[in-house]
Image (tube, rainbow, N blue to C red; front, side, top):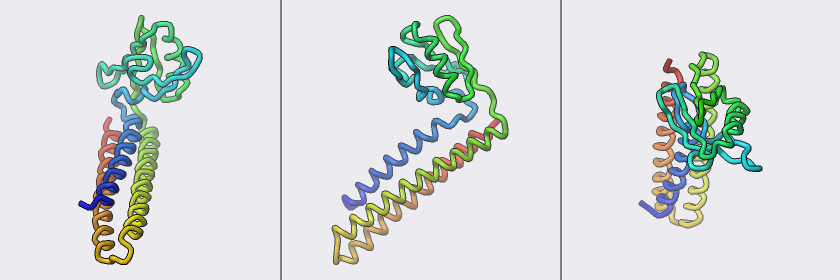
Length: 183
């Protein structure tokens, strides 16, 4: 594989990584730590994300329950307030030195909203891939100016990468939609 095509592949893989992270934040009715990791908490005179290793450990005890154990018990109320303020549809309950969050079932209307948001994220991912393709095509034309055979060969190679990536993005969407529609 040509170095330009390899560079394009690396950029596309980065886009897919970003997209997977984005999609993991969409709630599916199952408890996962990613649902609360990005919530911003006001603590110690500043703000910090609840992400694992920053303020607390986040664990899943069953398919419907997230348990948060703060490293410092004095910020328990701040974590609770931050979760409530995030408007993620969660009601945190302080239980001794932990916070429990029961994940409520999704209504059909909420599922449809989440599918719409997911499709928006997928389209943004496709736009980023098309941007990578556009930049790669420009680079190929600059580097191989006057060598039409090489340009056509590399453009086909890059287009194949893009087509495969678009199929991958579509499969992410189908998989996430199935998760969202499960009751």
